[in-house]
Picture (cartoon, rainbow over the protein chains, first blue to last red):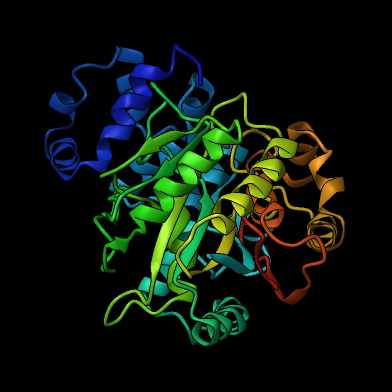
Length: 97
Length: 276
């Protein structure tokens, strides 16, 4: 884990606490106060690939994904730069998610 | 004297827990997975181990990257279920065997494995996604667990050979405990999958099948491989199968595989295997 990614990962990781999660969902700008502008922008857009390239841990991104109702296949498709539908076509049991 | 009655290797994919919690036992997309665990659940119901010793990894839930321990042993009498972003699963808190865990900690340190010890921390799906496939949750868990959290997230990771030797030391620790307890080892993780990078979505069933063969017949060959070998063959996140080597190291050399199931529906190959 890069030192650069630590602040962002700490924020993402904090979403396992219900209080933080609720604040992020209700008042995202206030909840993201400690992040840089670039970090806030990636989180706002749920730009999974940019977040990963920046240094976010997959396991911390999972906390954000769960809070926002995004599945792991959706995230993996984004990392591959393809749509969920295109990704699911490469899978043996597309319904198992 | 406490003794090890067998071992289980199993995936710990979070969607296994989701499928269980949503009651998808008879959903055609999930049935092959649930069927694959029936033999393991039956074995556990018949053999009635007092303790399951779980070698698994946390997913930046219990611990965070400001301090990621290499090997952390839980020594509590009870563990809360962690909230991973969806709320807490509706399953009972885990019961721990604090006395045996503390004995194992002393024995391992004496054996030159300097562990981190933890207590009163919540546990994530790495342990209880497979647990709910194997043990009934109602009216309560039929036994206790001892959690060993292994760092497979933050490099440098422990070497596969170190994991195998740790398993052998855990066997010595358990067998030197005076109380007459039955312990089953559980090694979790894998099989092939990669979640990040351009190779996200990678699997290799051929390698997975070879791994399932070698873990029974020639675990020492697996222990001689490097983390990079495991990541190349089974995917970046698939390298976590080194935790099966801890389980296997704690079993007799001539342990036999009684059952195996393999299912690769989506991004991670889901396997379970039973050894005695």
